[in-house]
Length: 588
Ligand code: GTP
Ligand code: SPV
Ligand code: MN
Image (cartoon, rainbow, N blue to C red; front, side, top):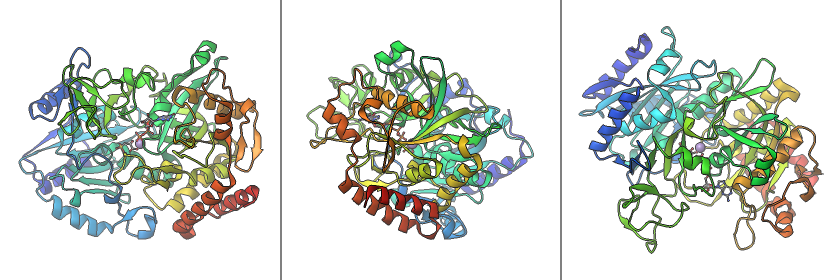
């Protein structure tokens, strides 16, 4: 299929004239084409084919050692007014940034091929789906985009010939110089430019650049939400099904929760959990006034370390074929990927830096942010409605962070305004998903700190406004913390499949059935309100998991205030109101 949209054709020609690729190839998304892309990546050394019996059509790749995670300090929101980017984003003047990028990228594709990747974010034919184009000189990016989005002809079919409504993206791996790495967003023109990185969230533009940063600005203008959320469906023993979204920061458990397998006792009773998405949700109002979610993605770009048949069997079965492994280690005897948490180390291991590795080595064999790229349709728990054009109705929204102290296992917000406050005041310890220190507590509102494409204060206001529109039809809002630790630093909560126990309470609250105590934080389960049968958990651990400690919250309130002051005058007054009410309820 050739592209007959004149806006696209003209822009591709103009871009080629600037970047000067040796040739231009339009990607159609076919199986044949994907096979030839993989063959090329094998012959140029980017891909190492894995054992075709154990991991058919799957490949191992490693990145430049400097290019392993999102680079938040090199990510820019470029708006005419600095105030539109707000205090949480790096801002640049669009004219200045275009100048910088033009001089850096002029002729950067000489001797290379420029691939034109049309991509669709969202299900084929959905009114909520949107089209983007990524012009890239990285065949690795094309291969990953083929899994993560619906690319090629499917995307072209979803763009009208007279439509100028698509995202224009340019990506070049340049020379991977970290000093001149740029991940730039121009929300006023729907333009994305990434330069000098080949890593997922920096280079696969459909994901964070479009589906969160650009989409969040569209969502604000058009009255919907673009969020860093998984989507899952839960069926109870009566056969009633509810869908839930959950926003956790990067590497804090979305993929794992989305693919949860309930404990044996739940399975015997007939509980079932199914997966719609593991990272991003676009939420629109349906004609019944409720919120409906689509997963804009078609694949999973998941954290490998920690993934195993113990923690996440559905992920393990998803990645058995047609998968790209990036920066994991390699078992040289079996030619299968390996990472920390998978099980016993194999005899001969090549680490992600391509060195020989043994358990005695002081480094990790797999990079902590090593990832698999796998088609969502291969997931055994994929939901029958995961590509439903209208999305799935959402009954609850769950916020969560990685916090050793302070926040209890779970609590429910009193109403939408309070729920928005709970989202705004999320905080979490940093992970390897972004460059920088790991394990430092930072405020991460709605798990969107690195992904809000505009002023965070306006974003909080947009959440409040959405609630005003829908009233009582908005989902219930909850907060969870799987990561509370004891004095020895050990996780108190078993997590993973046992998170089902918390989901049951959440749905019980939505249905008005589960018990709770009204506490300063909102509504919290007492130990007897949770089904803990069969969980390996002492009574003391349960008490600690549910505890709200004044000293912790005193610090927490201070930290919230600092954050509010950073947001400044655009912080909605309702958020201050909720903060003061919380302070009063806590007696602090
Ligand atoms: P992104 O893809 O970066 O957005 O991350 P994600 O939120 O999908 O995170 P993911 O589910 O991949 O989890 C990341 C890490 O958290 C892995 O090392 C998991 O093993 C660990 N993890 C996930 N769920 C739990 C849990 O319930 N308890 C504990 N203790 N660890 C968990
Ligand atoms: C995240 O960092 O939140 C991810 C991985 O989901 S990336 O696509 O690299 O952003
Ligand atoms: Mn993510």
